[in-house]
Image (cartoon, rainbow, N blue to C red; front, side, top):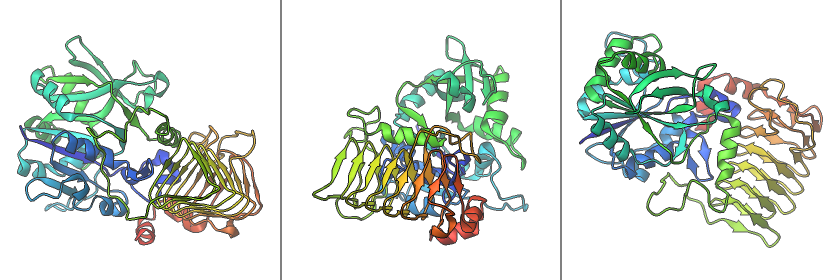
Length: 438
């Protein structure tokens, strides 16, 4: 039976802060050579779903460039294949901007009808997981469901970030609460929905207008309340991570350095595909020492690397040390610099004899205390850190910062270093961002 996959990939990812200021969240690099959207695209192909629409909106340039025509995922097909679905203005001049997850799908009803699938599977483009959608689709058909929602238990302390479900013994859902302040349980929606196509189209027409509309608020609760609708939960106990916060992004990356990580990137049975950069092999100098780390193509390591993710093209000079950190593409770390517990974006240069992540002061970031409070430092794209800088914990360094932005070499914990260009980018000056990303 024919299934159409729609991947929601237009999110800004505000909880990733300056890390997603240049790109849509699904385009954020992950595990060295991948991007977040690679996992859902690979799951589709491994589940034999070859009709895929990707709904983009916020800063689509780098995401569209990465996806292209879908060749790395075998989606460059004459029939089916991959289609980029960007916002457009309708015949009646309605607002062309997607206003919520359900409204984004509503705006593409004609695409769904033209494809004429039996079922539509709605997927998030920014989660890291391995899942055979065929098994969920089989469950959906066996139950004769109008809607099936994938869910798994999460820690109670994190439950407020998700839609929380309750169900009967037969797995029929009795309650769905979107991001409750006081969660009634911990069975969380994974943001994976299988709809009968005709049911989805009817619900979109009934509940979506040009006002904001989301699946968690405007589609799912009315279906559960309607006793005629068959809404079931598919419990999934495999690997799945929502990397929506800086801490979870950092932790999920570093989890992959374990001897036997829960997510196996090396499986021949379930491969993850990406648009690889054409770079030479990784190179290790005679004084280099590397342990418990992922090192990507094009990296040159002459220093020490421990429990870290090193992305393509990173250069670490002799005498430098990187520990417990995620270093993104083409960043340069000069001699004598020590980096601990950091996420460093693309094309950053950290000059000689710096200490990034120093001391026992874990004061939360003064501007973003809810995002940075566990000692992690974030340095955004193309920043330049002057020689001899000593940086505490929970610091933010905006993109395009230069030496002129630093008033002193000692940066206390909880600080934020900005530049005028970096402020414009983080504030959402999309024209400027797209210009710089080209």
